[in-house]
Image 1: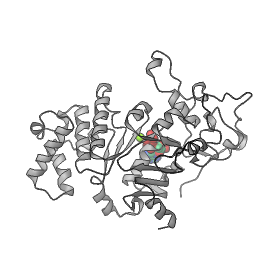
Image 2: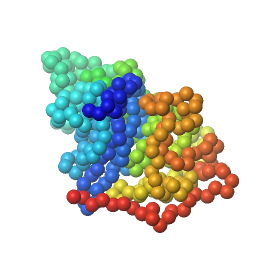
Image 3: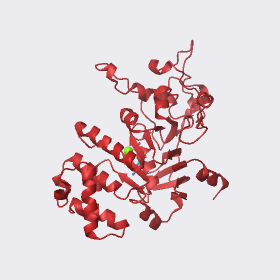
Image 4: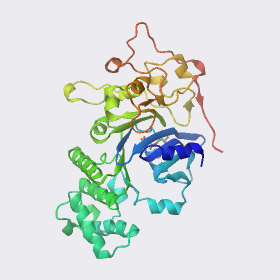
Length: 376
Ligand code: ADP
Ligand code: MG
């Protein structure tokens, strides 16, 4: 272990610290650069949102943390994932299996994928408890009923003998939450936990997840493309684009002072009550193909703030000067970090472009090019 790693473990009260994580897929001809040096910290009992358009590397990041990446196509190419004093990347499969479900658990996007259709709900919740704790069947079932009650399933004792298909989608997701929280994990990862549900039950399920994690002191890593959900559920937000973290800050700070043009674009694209009936402004263009990565900032082709340097160099993730001056820390959960050569100024968020007289975004130079790497 390097001195640097020791320092990471020792600083602050982060339950999870991801450092410079890189994940590659060897599929087809070219290497897919799905996650490209991602770092973030989640404080114990905290709530961190990972946000970004579809394909930005959110799920791959969470699968790397859980060590559930598809084999053999995916590999962790670099990085460290610190959890409770251990680097998860270096744990054996056996140690990782013991940790999964007990110390870190997952609420998947589609509750059906996490449930076994031929086992009753009671068996599945009780099985999770018995897999990690030395309790008798009767006691496990009693605790299963208690948990189903806690997630708002009516008459839980009567429901233990029913099968997943006898529940609605919303009720199935409540069962998944019960399973995920059964062993009081220190960390819960919820990957778009309500996208498969009816709009009317989405809010209830999120509210439940929020309430239970707060009550139990469980830290939550919430993945969503929906900033409205993030505003209600999280204390910090990490914004991802093309497998990079482009901005990371406390949630209130992200909403008050978004500094990356991409973050500002995401904020402009969410519906606000004040603007009902107004058209939303989606970010024009689309993310790059991850097997053909540009040399510079991957957002440059869509960015109204682009400078010449943006086409050549990906900026490092560094503290925002104004936030430091206002007392924010340099790193850790309270920091405001940004990877941008030309940050959005206050007042430019609404406009969606720089308001500096005479400013024009630098055009794409011919050598911007796309770097490909062939699979071995
Ligand atoms: P999201 O942010 O929508 O969760 P993902 O993390 O699922 O995005 O995917 C990030 C990128 O990783 C995708 O755009 C894709 O290029 C690549 N990827 C994900 N899963 C696979 C896979 N099984 N095989 C090859 N490439 C994959
Ligand atoms: Mg995903």
